[in-house]
Amino acid sequence: MSNKNKNRDGIVYSTNSSFEYTETNNDDAFTLPNAEQNLRVFLDRKGGGKMVSRVNGFVGSEDDMDELGKLLKKHCGVGGSVKDDEILIQGDHRDKIVAFLIKQNYKAKKAGG
Image (cartoon, rainbow, N blue to C red; front, top):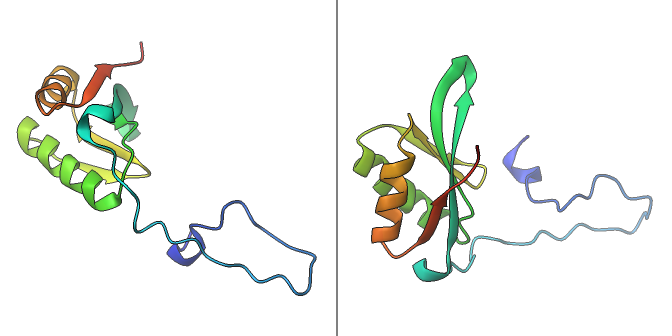
């Protein structure tokens, strides 16, 4: 999907001939303070059976999420990415991630089976 159609809020088609779509700008998203964030750390298998630690639940701007992703990758000493409102860290580093997030005053815990 192209970036220009990404934030359409579920509108696919309108029969109203005078309908004009107005885009909502989410660039100024407000980031909750660390103590109010409620983060969950999962363990997933991505393509090829590789293990990935996934952090969900971050509420805030993309820039702040990117910064947290960089800190987590640096702390764990591995690669990863930030996309689709998730932070992905290569490998099973759930314990390290949860300990780091708690040290940074986030509410975080391991989730999933």
